[in-house]
Image (cartoon, rainbow, N blue to C red; front, side):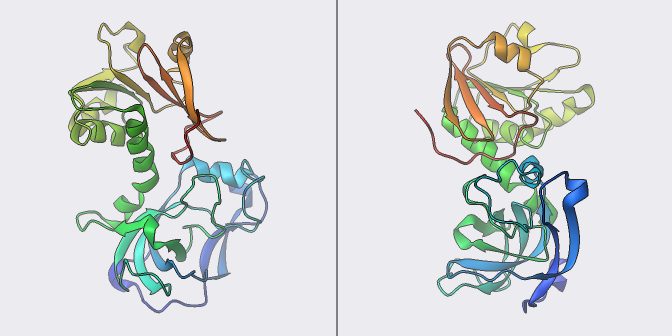
Length: 289
């Protein structure tokens, strides 16, 4: 991707992009094309010169056709997360100026109403309300890695009602989601004690992020811990499948869509994100009774 200092604010009519014209395995259907039309912006959107973009598991699911019943018609440029420079403003866009460095997740409703033109291109369009100014202490690559994972972590903690003084156990603390959960729980939500699991070589990372207790899941089962926690945040599918199933009684499915669901159990307030193969780094949808 281009460096910010080299970004032109005069957008061309065509650009390079990764695009798929049929559903299937990413390696087989995702193609790099050099003559893709630059998206036209709506009145409340801005056009972004992409400097960095991030991939999430939901992108692979979309390419496979998991959301084809509600997805936009092919062809499609994938990508949710972006960091770049504003090069054009819609007629009613007032939040940013040309040249502003921004970042965000351009799809507002997760797997619903997905944009046909995503972030894996030289240019992409997004509603200005979905973007924020890029912090000056973050590189474009760092900023592009944050939006979807941060949304998932923050809204998960918010929905389960984690509050100051409570304790939390994070399963999969060294992953893209878990690393955010640890930091938010400790430094934003005010958790009094944060424990997290990871493999042996990643225990120091957990501590550097704010974990009070780093647990090597290759040596110790969370089921054997003498300590109890107010909230258990399961950020990795499979690692805790047996333990979560053993705590099935008293669990309520309080929110779900076609990719992810949240379970809260009465005994441990077990927060569990489940999906058939892997956790999707997204958390957008309506709460259900």
